[in-house]
Amino acid sequence: MKILIATDGHLDPEATADLVGRIHTDGDTVVVLTVIDHPGEVLRNFADFGAWKDTDQILSEAGSGATGFGSGGVAASRMSKRDRAMKGQPLTLDNYFIETATSLQASLLATLEDAGLIVERKWAPTERRTARTILDVAADEDAGILVIGSHGGGKFEGLLGSTVTKLIRQASIPVMLVRS
Picture 1 (cartoon, helix red, strand yellow):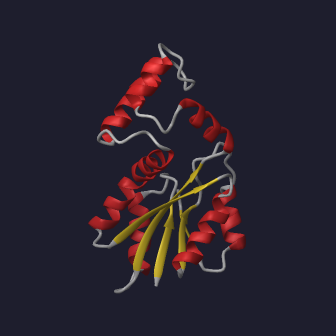
Picture 2 (cartoon, rainbow, N blue to C red; picture 1 turned 45 degrees about the vertical axis):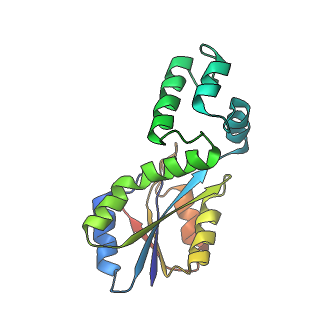
Picture 3 (tube, rainbow, N blue to C red; picture 1 turned 90 degrees about the vertical axis):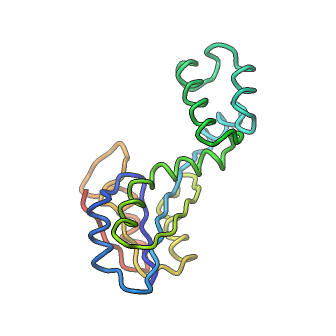
């Protein structure tokens, strides 16, 4: 069976590893998925910003404080760190999404691997269709079960997060919740 864990970085790694460890059997595959929501407005701003260019070129063209992401110095500092972390790779949307997903998955992946599980990582872009994207990946991966957190990192809190509610209602496979 394939176990798909969908995370936005808010899943408790210990609780998730415990839950997955209880349902995992020999031969099962564990896939950790992060869906990166990239609304059109963000993409337009990112494209205007010159996302396909090297950080040094962006900074020299932008001048002081003209970056469009908060204060120029802070944005420049973040971009320089990002560029260094990516070993000089140009700042592209794909690189940005991969870096974001890797960062959000790091703690969970380490905990699952420490528990002796072999884990694959995936990420998928979406535009305000997080639940649909998760379900599409679950279908593509032929997942037998979906593991998600009871709440994500959204601004509104209720009994369950809106994405979680959609997944529970629409999934054709069992959904297990990790309490947060």
